[in-house]
Image 1 (tube, one colour):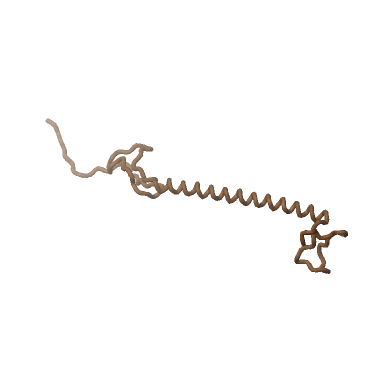
Image 2 (cartoon, rainbow, N blue to C red; image 1 turned 60 degrees about the horizontal axis):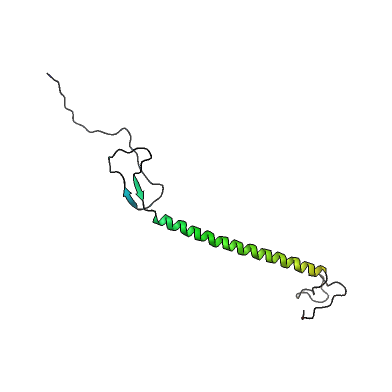
Length: 122
């Protein structure tokens, strides 16, 4: 003789996890169905990454433009430094006329004694 008992009810799992991606996007592939057992680090779904690939390409292009702008600014700075050095040398040698904004008799920089204007019409 065997004793059997029948019970009615429902089963529930010990743990329940909410799966949410860190980024938004369209689901490209589902690896599991609802209720399937899942292991740690197992791929559950794959998101479409075309938008992210495009964003990376755009960021690389923006970086290239910024690098070119930086190079241009550095070149302009170097040219300005050379021009300043040249003008200081000419000033120290007395080869520069007074600035155009100065009028005779004003206080400020005046050419060294013996200075003569260059022939090209300063």
